[in-house]
Image (tube, rainbow, N blue to C red):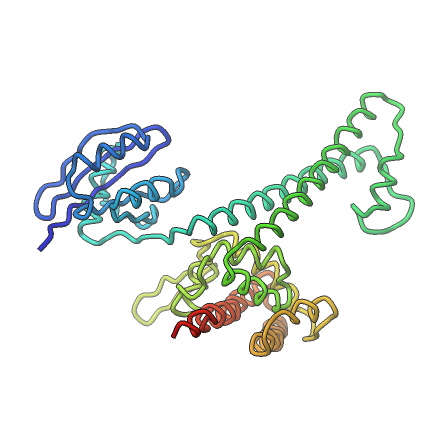
Length: 376
């Protein structure tokens, strides 16, 4: 029987602290090596057959580069959730070496929880989607600066209407201030708003191109999710890239827990206490579904835009989307009639929306592929 040796790696930008837990007995620190591919290769070669090694490290800002490097060397590696690493009460000493030893020992004992590691194509699309999300946040800040500057100067558009439309921007461009410094401020703020708008549009175009190059199964999931009310192209791409394979969740409740929209609980005996949502999950998915949940305030209907999106999906997917409209709108009305806070209602609706996202995703991913049927 092959004896498995467990490696605990405390990874930083420039260094990696290494500890080794033998199959039975001691756990020893092997020192600190540079976080470079050649140093990692030498370490694995020194420790013996790669088939006998199991490595783990905490998820963090260094990403999954080390995971891919170890996998390429034949070492089975897992990236673990840092918040779920056991901590001894009263332990007040923390160093890189001690962290590596703790990881190796806990990994050998099976006390660590691995996280999902995306495939290279999924991670690339996710990075692009997150870049667009960051650009939208920068655009919001730029617009906020400009609008508050105009407010301080007492500038109001001559006609009531929505801000940031073409008509509104034309009014801003023709403004003139007596003080040259104020005019320079306006031009700088205006340039930043226009620059951010161009940046968002450029990234959205690149996302559309990246989706066309994505695997067929992911493209089907993205199209299927757009059958749901409130989930357009960018939202569907965000969900698909953040979750990867939706069918990796055995139940819809697991997906809800992964997104952090389930209630906290502190129950003991016959007493039950439930609090706010945990928020211990994927914040990007949580944000998208909560934003989409606002669409279910309105009565079930299929407008022209939604009808056009649903033309690309099968009839069973359309039926799931229609069922979602009916159920989630009723859920919203029922909670609103009880006088619940609207933000809590939307969170509850978003949690149930994840159930329909799971249903659509799993139905598409578990459907037999034409090439597999032909091969059979």
